[in-house]
Amino acid sequence: MFKRIDQDNRPRVQILVDGAALEARQGDTVSSALLASGRDVRRATAVSGAPRLPYCMMGVCFDCLVTIDGVGNRQGCLVPVADGMQIEIQKGKREIGR
Amino acid sequence: MTTSLVTTTPGRDTYDVVVIGAGPAGLAATAMAAGAGLSTLLVDENAGPGGQVWRAIASTPVKAPEQLGADYWAGADLVAEVQASGAEIVHRATVWSLDRQLEIGVSVGGMSSFIKARRVILATGALERPFPIPGWTLPGVMTAGAAQTMLKSSGLVPDGRTVIAGQGPLLWLLAAQILRLGGRIDRILDTTERRNYLAALPHVLDFVTSPYFAKGLAMMREVKARVPVTTGVSELAAAGEGQLASVSYVAGGRRETIPVDLLLLHQGVVPNVNLAMAAGIEHRWDDRQLCWSPLLDADGNTSVAGIAIAGDGAGIGGATVAVARGRIAARAAIEALAPAATAKLAAENVLRTALAQAERGRSFLDVLFRPAPQFRIPSGDTIVCRCEEVSAKDILDAVAIGATGPNQLKAYRRTGMGPCQGRLCGLTVTQLMAQARGKSPQDIGYYRLRAPVKPITLAELAAMPQTEADVKAVVRG
Image (cartoon, rainbow over all chains, first blue to last red; front, side):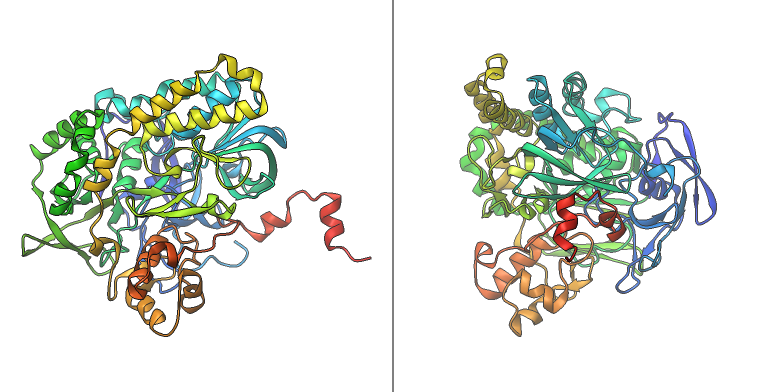
């Protein structure tokens, strides 16, 4: 859906998405990095399990909810990536205790 | 918790002025208030200053100035001014509460605290108007603003088959930016109603003498030279199995379906009212901009003493208007808290003239780009509440058995009770129920919003520092 522009020379940052390494750029949000990856990063909603991707990218819609470093229901569009960050695509509700 | 959650926190618990939101209005207000010597805190949810219009201005990978345009880089001076003003700035801070005592609940790095202000300037800006068409929840359907955010902050541009649908200045700006950066757009579907051109005529003189006119024309020409544009689109639907696959539309009586990977929707922006309404600030239905706007005096003061609103949260005006309103609100705060310091500031009438100039041309845009009813008030299975997955039909069924307004509807269908707290369904619910019940949106009303206006965990609330009075209030004996 998206590609990076050639002139982007920001430093590389490595994150893990469901255990697999993904190269992002410093300054990417988690959601931007996921959408840029071209992988299937659709979450599943808590109500019906319908697949979703981020919709607004500005902290409003909550369709970017994702588990980051073990904490569920984080807004991926508001959290910048950091080296070694562990992302899990959230399928359904946030689990109790995380 | 890991290190990725940690960031700086406010250094004190009381400030003269707390500004919420680091977009054009918030930056302008902060620079003036802090520059006048008031202790000023600027809190913002994003990683850097700029809000949405100047998003990532300090960090964008897009370096060639002409690609994002002069209006984008205009924000750099204000950012520099704020950085030199002595204000305290906390990014990645989520304000989840504001009350009549001017106490602000703010979450930073997973920890919450309360801050007191003598004056609060809300500059929480706008969000994109809901665009509830069939299939708008499918992966691959996003807002135009979302694509623009990714473009500015991460240098990402659409790559697959891309359609942009809707209307308004932002749509053309986004299209121009995508093309300049080598992104792909297959078609633009323009939903502007033909009758709006006639309705906007009385405002045209105001518009052609405003800066919008030349800029807007040039941008539309630039885009139209490279992308086919279909005008008069009167129906729009996205379809696909778990992923967007096609867009169908009706224009000039003909239906077309085109395969597509990415659909970007836009039909204007509306004030982001959640924090203001939760603070008890009175709003009214604005029939021209089709949204809720706060009741304000000429300085931006709200119905709650000590709280002013500046920027698009005060009614949509755009970045230049936001800067002017930010300065007016800050000047009023300085006048109230440190009158002697106003001597060095721009005179009140100078600020008001700047505002009037910046507002020129807006009425034309409001009338021309007034979204058509069918794109605001959906029917049938079209989802209205994305969080709780409630359709237009579900809501009309609830009305038929007695739901009178948005707050009653919560008990029937949970609309507005998901994590977005009505931001993506509230306007639709009000207009849908108003139409179904033959009442005005003002009579139907809006969700009663309450803190926390952003979800925070109970653990975070429980971990907040407690005063002796807090403990006394709940401990027996």
